[in-house]
Image (tube, rainbow, N blue to C red; front, side, top):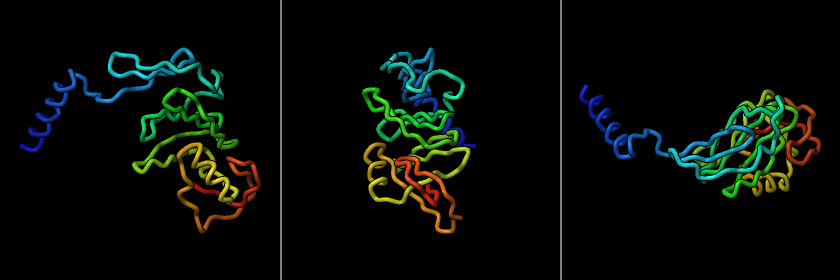
Length: 165
């Protein structure tokens, strides 16, 4: 009981320290076709209109931030959008599979969950380097026991016989 009481008092102290708000960081607001970054009750930034449009196939399925606080948005139509600090969007097409989730781990690697599971990669160092340069993400896992299947690399469009994470 003493541990609970100490943790509760610590939480109340932090609550008071941040002006009665439990949320220390900011949040992203998606409304009326625009993206806004807020901190508390102050709007910090307004981005341009959604680069993915507003039709049903382009609905947002997930969003998160990278380690630098830049926005990453997963869209049902198979695209992931990474926004830099100025609000410029880079589109990453994952293929013809709907995006279900995006997450950045503590090392800064971007993980994208799709209806099809893992994404195809053409296996070339050039594609891996280009993905890393454009998105700051790396290809982290190549399953060794995966069944070979034909497909197309999500980045280059070249033929692929394997999926990666």
